[in-house]
Every structure is written in structure tokens, then in C-alpha cells.
Length: 127
Image 1: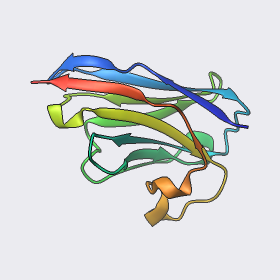
Image 2 (image 1 turned 90 degrees about the vertical axis):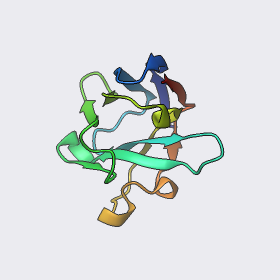
Image 3 (image 1 turned 135 degrees about the horizontal axis):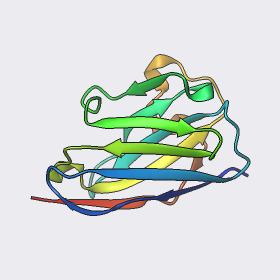
Image 4 (image 1 turned 180 degrees about the vertical axis):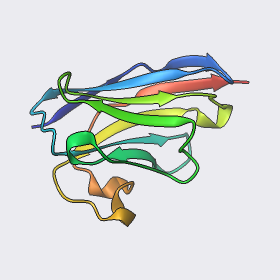
């Protein structure tokens, strides 16, 4: 069973930065799709960014690109999310996810397409 473990969350002031990590602790496969999602209280889980097999191609939600950067280090079996210029609206629990199946462009940030999930890490941005 694929196991994912997020870290790097915390509290930061608006304008600050954080880098989230997602370590694959079991059954890492560089050909899996991997992605970051977040869920704020009372809101649905939303996709932030995804990276395709091999880690060469990345995809972002329309309003996420620019402040958020997804990357993957296959040697370290770790997925990253660099978050800059954070805003209070970015406050949420952030999750990483992975899945072995091909993702059509419209489904790459659809949480229902991902089989394996981490437990999440809290990010709190104060104004």
C-alpha cells in the first residue's frame, strides 16, 4: 500500500512562505501521478497542482500558478509544494495524493481521481 506523509505546515504571517513536503514511505513509483490539494473549514477539497509521471510536467489550478510551485525529487521519493506570498485565504489543511492511472487534462486536479492520500498538514496564515 502506498503511504504518504506530509510535513512542513505551520503558522506564518501574510506574505510569508512555506515549503511542504510529502514523503512516500512505502511503494514509491516515479510513474505515479502526484498532486497537492487543500481543504479549508466548511469548504470542499480543492486541487492546487499536480505532476505527471516522471515529474517532468506540472499542472496548476488557474489561480494557484505563480505563488505555488510543485516539484518532485525521485531520489528522495518526495513531493514538494513551495508556497510564497501566502494569504489568510490560504489557511487550510494541505494534502498530498498519488495515483497510478493516466489523468486526462480536466481530471488532473480532481480529488476523486487519486487513490492514495496523506493525513494532511495544517497551514495557518495570519493577517
